[in-house]
View 1 (cartoon, rainbow, N blue to C red):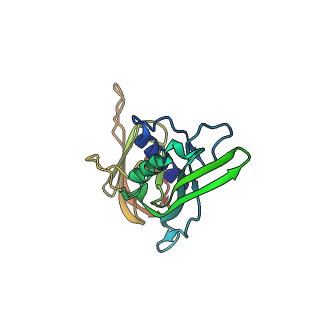
View 2 (view 1 turned 180 degrees about the vertical axis):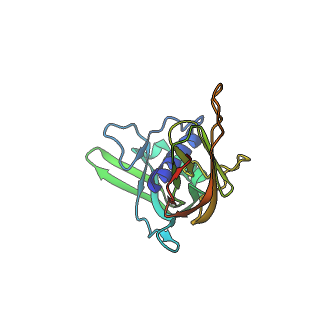
View 3 (view 1 turned 90 degrees about the vertical axis):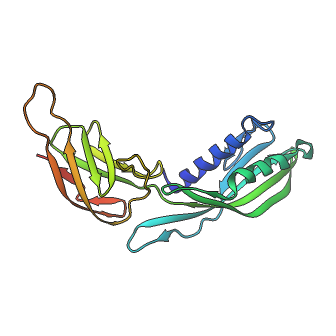
Length: 231
């Protein structure tokens, strides 16, 4: 997922969850622009003016600073659209997340204005929300020869692959999983000890499991070496 996809997926799911099970449930939620013929009121969110990415030494992107407008649009004041704007702010403002996803959300400015069109007046109410995202990092190591499944340790980070010829450390879900099952976040750049062990020998066959042990370098979401030969 890209940084904007991570942010927008969080905004959509969080607002939808906040409204569900209440008198406000059923309100359509649209990215960018509401579809023609949508029901009113509806909620619209859109990217406004992102700031420059935050970098560390080299080309490693560590933070994306995104500004989103999240608002409710209603046809009449009688729809009490302020309730929707309050719900939006309640579930978004002040959020603090974990590595490998949305790290935090803060409302910077309220939004409120009236727009006239051929269909009458439209009332807009919501806010501008600063969304800080840590890019998801997926490290892929390809294994040549050998038998699957594989298990691998990259430093303390554990991964397993049941089929195919790749081993993946994926922080898109919030981190990299160590043997205890703890999500430990983004894999920083650096040199790591790595060990790969081939899966068990199939029943009825003779042989031993193959193991590779060595150092790999993490830089810019890439592993070097990126291919390990077990046999």
